[in-house]
Image 1 (tube, protein in one colour):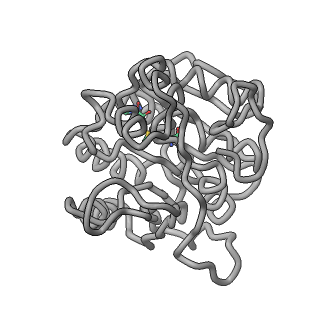
Image 2: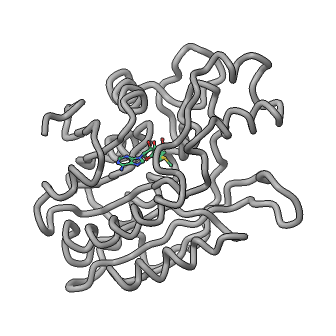
Length: 265
Ligand SMILES: C[S@@+](CC[C@H](N)C(=O)[O-])C[C@H]1O[C@@H](n2cnc3c(N)ncnc32)[C@H](O)[C@@H]1O
């Protein structure tokens, strides 16, 4: 398959991950770090933009001006996709390598529990890391202020761990409030850097099969890793390529692209 973007060891495929991963060799990936669709039903309308507009996070008219940006496969099919991913992770990861998978936090759907059990069944569960993202999410009663990152480990060798003797399983990094034209669920570069540092070394290969606007790849390049990203929607491949090509940040307050900084996004 022809890559959409390729430079300095970073490759993007504009494709369905289910068509790309089977072409990757067995035991060829040093870290799988991804943020799949959560199944929060942002697939059939522009919920993210409407929510931001309701909260006054975008100027009036800005959401409407930005094209609609539903997330592909964000319905119940997200579950199937994630189960498929964990099975494929077992094949493509080198023994001892980790699969770090972003996941929602809390209820009412105990998704973190379901996905954790699948990760354990198909790969080997290591840890659930809490991403304390600050601020309060939408809703009433228990309002969300964290997400989780589920960490699985392929058996057969010592865990690829470069995080020192100990590290907390809580990480505090402010969430991104994307502008109306940006990917609605952009993750902070610093969050992806955290896991890349702990589970891989320079020159190793990081895979993100659901890369969105390429945050994992941006972090991987900053840290001197090689990376492969896959994304179904061309608009996000375009954004990712621009971030990698021109070194522009996300979450900038103006239309003038900001240069990468630590904690970009
Ligand atoms: C939660 S977003 C990732 C956001 C990303 N972490 C970022 O910072 O921009 C999940 C992405 O997976 C993509 N996606 C959904 N199904 C896919 C599939 N089968 N293959 C590849 N990408 C897919 C969606 O288009 C969406 O952009």
